[in-house]
Image (cartoon, rainbow, N blue to C red; front, top):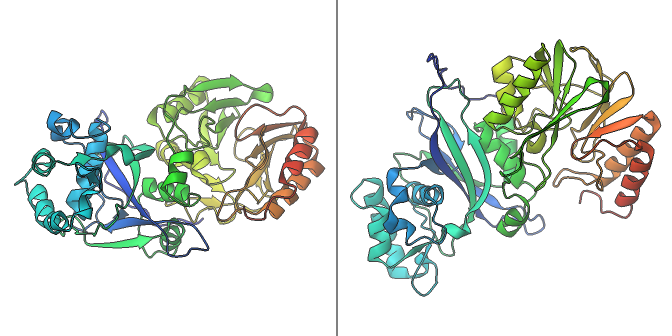
Length: 449
């Protein structure tokens, strides 16, 4: 078993969960250093070891939503009148000295050299409580550019912990000419890293990341700039939870805010009755994990294992919460443990996960991701993840491989499944035709693209 280091807050002994306080986090993005590989850099700040919550972690700037973030004077000078967005930009200014605001003529606040020179003093006064944000905006006739924030995630601290937050994650581009001015009380150091480099540093044990941070970095790996983030990674929260009972006793659930393609949350599959294996719990929303547990309870069984077709956040983000509630071990493909800062057992091609009522045969299907697996049930039903869906097969940059994806599809064809339950969308009742269409869609595609 590979178990990357993960900070574990003390568990609560209270009979009822602590109410999660609203919070906001901002991912500050700037162009990456390598023009040949368009991956941006993001700001990670190191929290001092002395801090009660998250000490020693590399995090994105952020904090709780304060009552003053709903001040009408601030909202009146904000393009998107949302206290969460105000909190994100206030915390960014307090911690890092970057003010995302515009002057009366529409130019960035920091483009005025005279005002830029004032920013360190204003940041210190704001962090020290000598000034509030409303006074700064009014005095200098600034508009808080809350409309530039891109909502990309929402995470809640697990219910067992005594300090809980319900945190909105936003991404925003570093304004032209902005310079960092870090608050030493909250920041012990900082790094500008590409998402891939940050995940590599975590896997090597060089830095520690909280699970929401590492998951956000996974999603950002495929976005070359803020425009791409806005186009492809905006969080969808309005979709309802759904439940379907499939032939063979399988139950398919979908969540409302999973980090999959917009409008296409991942399928979560429950297999078995007394001893249940859950495949791809991608949605970390507390209500969705409640739904998984309720379905297992209704079957009269218990969850004994969690299996991941791959560790993309849309399929794996809920596995930590489900593991912590049930104690069920998590299984993933070769290399799948590296980007997940929680306990994972890697399984190889041909392994048999004989843990639940129905054994799962592990089928390595790299291409979409190098760790991608499919699972075959005794009745020749295939759980294909994203190796095969009802839409054209695609691969994930930067590690995706079109050649490997084609080979994986050929292998699935030779297995001759009688039906395929994919990672997104409906059951594929004609697998042979679906595989042919997927291979055709990949024909001519650029390897790794």
